[in-house]
Each structure stands twice: as C-alpha cells, then as structure tokens.
Image 1 (spheres, chains in turn yellow, cyan, orange, red):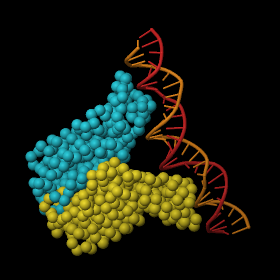
Image 2 (cartoon, chains in turn yellow, blue, cyan, orange; image 1 turned 90 degrees about the vertical axis):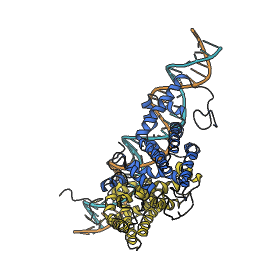
Image 3 (cartoon, each protein chain N blue to C red; image 1 turned 135 degrees about the horizontal axis):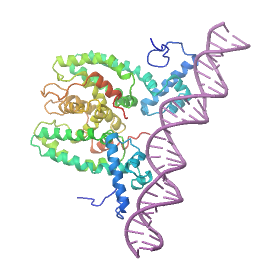
Image 4 (spheres, rainbow over the protein chains, first blue to last red; image 1 turned 135 degrees about the vertical axis):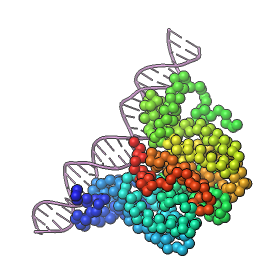
Length: 226
Length: 226
DNA sequence: GCCTAAGTTGATCGGCTTATCCACTTTGCA
DNA sequence: TGCAAAGTGGATAAGCCGATCAACTTAGGC
C-alpha cells in the first residue's frame, strides 16, 4: 500500500481522534464555512471563514489543506439530502412526476445554496465530489429515468447523463436571477423539461420574465455580490 | 437610425479625431484584446492585452477607462454578426427551422468565443451591451417567435424573453465541455428546444455524453484554463 | 503536576488583478 | 522649424487571493 496516514482528506481519517479543542474548532470552521458559502458562494476567502469561526487562518489550513478539501468536507454530507430527494422521488407513482419532482428538488437545493450553484457552474475543479455524487445518486436517477422511459413519457434517446446537465444549465439562471426573480428557475426548468415545442398542452407556471428582468440577468445589474 | 456618432463608448466623445499613432494603437489594442478574449475569456488582464498589442498598460487605460469600456467596444460590433444571423434565419421558410437555425447560430458564436460565453454567464456587469443587444436583435427574434407561434410549432406560452435565456443556459455547458466534447452543446440545445418529453420523434444529434464526460464537465477536470 | 506532541496564531509571502501617475516622446499645426 | 498638446511607457499603488511557517499555547497521558 502507499502512504496510509491520510489524515485530512480523501481516503479516511481515523488515524487519531482529534484533540478536544481541535475537534470543536473543526466543527466551528465547518459551520462558519457552510453558512458563508451558502449565502455568498464559493468565493469567500479563508480569512473570512476563519474570522467567522473565531479561529486563525492557519487553523483552517491545518484542518483542510486547501480549498478543495474544505469544500469537499462541506458538501459531501449535503449529498445525503440529494440522495434522500432522489429516493423520495422514486417512490412517486407517476413516472413523469417522479422525474420532475426530483429535478425540482435538485435545482431548489442549488437555489438555496449559492455554493452548490457555483459547484454546478464548474467553479471548483477536480474535487472528489462529482465522483461520489455520481456513485450515490446515479443509480437512483437511473431508475427514475428507466421507469419514465418504460412508461413512454420520457424520450428514449436521452440518458441520465443528459439529465445531469440540467442543474448545470439552470445554474446561471439561478445565479443571475437571484434577488430579481427568485422563482424564475421554476419556469425555465419546466420549459427545459417540457420543451419549447408546441403540442403538449401544459401551461407554464409563473409569467414570462419582463425584458428588464432579462436585461438584469444578463448583466447582473442589481443582483450584485455584496 | 438613431445616435449616429457614438464612436468610443457610452456618453460620446468624438471631440477630436485621435492622433494617428493613437488611432493605430487603439486598433492594435482592440485586435489583441479581441483575440485573447475570444480564446481565453474575459479573465485576461490588461497587462497581457497590452503586451500582446505591443503597448504599455497605461495606453490601454488611456483609451478605455476600465474593463467595461473595453469589453463594450469589443463586442458592440459583434452584434452585427448576431443581427445578420437573426435576419438570415428570419428568411428561412420553415418557421421552426428558422428558430432552430438562429439559436444554433447564437450558441455557436458563444462556443467559438470564450468572452461571449463569459458574458452570457453574467461575468461582466452593467455594460451597455445588453441594452443595445436587446434593441437590435430583439425585434428580429420577436418576428421569428411570432411566426413560429402563428404556425403552431412553438408553444404559445413562451416569449422571446424565454428564448433569450437559452444561450445563458448553454453557457456552462459550452464552457465546461470545451476541449472535452466541443459539440455537446448541439445535443443539449436540441434537447432544450425539443424537450425531454417523449412523443416527438426527432433523433437527437450526437451521442449521449459518457459518464466521464459529465464528470469532467462538472469539475472541469481536463478543460483547464492553461 | 509535568512534559511533549498536538494545536493555534497571525504576520507574511508571492502572485494575481485593476488602476494611477508623471517623466518622457511624438505629432502635427503655425 | 519649433513648440504645445496629445499620447506613451512602465514602475508602482492598493486589493484581493491562497497558502506557509516559526513562535507560542494547550491538552491530556504518565
């Protein structure tokens, strides 16, 4: 085998139970980072996280060698929620509704957590997250997809991979419409799932975005980072 | 016709025809910026642009007070291409094909110019571009939309505003798939326009992205900025 | 209670960006 | 030709960022 220490990150880390103070600091760092990142996105710096956690930067780096490690630690447990959502959706009888419900849940999570959206936009690279995400939610989604296709309500020439792209597509909508039209993504998601093509009745939820809204989204006028 | 002067930027500034050397420098700056930004996105710094233009940073700032002004100057003329594309699409007989052709052209432009993609992602704020874009391409697109709706091939509950969101949605796909699957956006665009719903025959172009591709897109593995 | 490994601190580094400033050079009109 | 006005070079400021490290503090086994 190779280095079998692996305290901080990937592999596992039960080498030695952290000292009490260290453990509490770690928890505070995670809590602070979670909150800040949910609200402001992955852009928040270590200094800020450290200050919020009432800890020094060095301490943050001691626990999480780099940003990637921190983000990994932060979001790996969020996966549980997604998995739960997927499993809940799987239990819905109507195959199409199951699919729609799941996608809505996924994008809603993105909308409520800026960091998640940044992730979907590809803001961070190379983290183990995507692998783990695929492994854990993939199978459930595959099941939903298969059922929908078997029922003839989902076109047969798509796969769950195609479906996986949808949250990424919605990310800029969610991100840029934030604070201007926080529900726009629901309409757009419905549109993406339903299609632009005429013929299939359903009336879209919400109202069409006003031209000013589109403007604002494109140039990010009011949204602002702040 | 409307404002008929408007050489450089926002307000107006045709006060005096630039000196020869200045004019040539301005052109070189624009050319260098255009190329760099097309290839590497809006992230390129002024220093780099200056070096490529064989000019000093100070000179860049003398012509373009800030990044916004530079980007404005760069892309305002690109609008001509989009307008041309829209007008060409308008002349296509089949209303649906006209719409699809236009959207393909718009996203293709994004795919071939990284800066354009960044713009669609909302990377830059507050520039006059979006206003001008709306004013110039809006009417043509509206015509395309109306025709498609009149022909009953486009669902009646969408507007050209909805359509305007599509390039933004495609942006993360284009950006994150660059160098991995440069044509993926065609499939996704077709999907967005066609809809996930079963029933409407058309076979999607391309093949479903492999799981690794989706992984790579999400975490931006190989793409790299370089 | 003491001692050492573990943990913490915060100044600091190096790299990047946007933007400014002023001594110097060039242009082009008189 | 000569001289102001226009333009230019490039060092530099000011701000971020992620990340490092040597000096200090603390936990907790013995």
